[in-house]
Length: 181
Image (cartoon, rainbow, N blue to C red; front, side):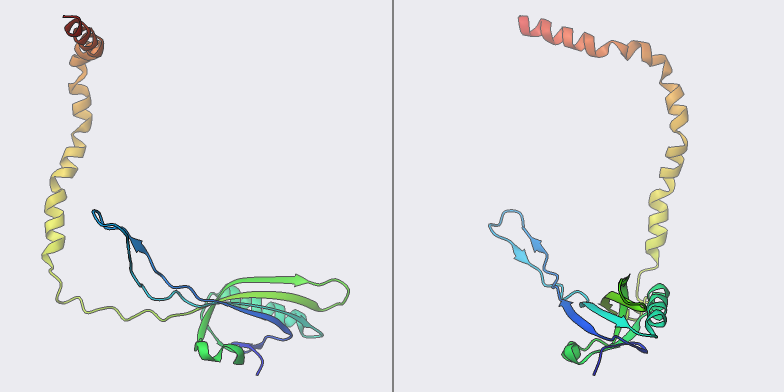
């Protein structure tokens, strides 16, 4: 069985590469020698499919695969070489089409596919505490009024500018006088 991307047959496939990564962040707890690894599962499987399409339908193939790429929607993918990976739906992450010289209607293609994992349904939020929003509003109520008072604070400090202008130099002189005694 040849690889199929939705209704497109990927012809003359020369290479199929899979990339599987696990998410294992390392945590270094304070006061502990060593570290702890946390297993967050695996990331979506990525596939790179490289091949050539030639003949009278090559331009049509190039147009269809580019349209699927630009649609940015999950599409079914089947290939016997990765049947055990159980990839049903994939997103086309990247597409590279190259018009090969020497023969008309001949394109090299590289398609990067990423496993599409359906998002989980939204959790039931009826058990959440609805007072959280009210608490947040109460905590920030005074903050807005305080931010509005900043221009008045600026103009209110103007009389003290001359007094405090040379404060640092006076303190340094005082510190020097203390250290000499």
